[in-house]
Length: 288
Image (cartoon, rainbow, N blue to C red; front, side):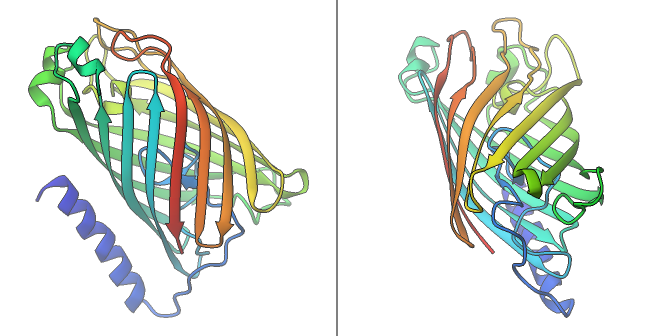
């Protein structure tokens, strides 16, 4: 079974199972407290994964969301679209397709104008302890563990660039705490990865798995508007081009209970020898 069809099957199975389980509800979470759709799918910030579970449902229900994301920097564009489902605020399954468009830069790299890398990301996350929202009388955050399988469609090319494989698995543990009395959202994650530019340029090279940090801090200006910043460290496994850390300044706005939009200024550093890749991140998410 192909990765995309396998992901669709997993999501459909989860929704069908929830439907027959009985006493299933939808909705119930406070606006924005389940994050937005992260770049690699699943719930989080734009660049970072959080410990929260996708969808608006509490521990009595099933929730889901779909998203479309566009990132435009000086020399490249990235599009991502996918879906995620959360079951009883405990388990999350997600599937995302990413398209990395080199545009005019492709010709400068010798790949051809408009050359594209495509990657499928299939994720699973499990909340193991805590509740980011409802444990307001406890200091402990919500903690989740997860994995993301990534499959790149340019096997021969990424190997020629120095990568060892065109597919790989990231593993992570994330902790998220929402302090309602202070209007703060704090999240951090440690990701074990060997992905080059999150896998868009393959996996491995001069090194194998390395732990990396992802952090988010946000302030709720209102129940509908969250502003903040994120920082994500990156490995640098390819000898021909260094890989920089990523950062952003973001604003996420809940248009309604079922629709939100996220905009950010992103600084992705050097990508494939082209320096100072800065630009705009836009994402639209619909869910229940």
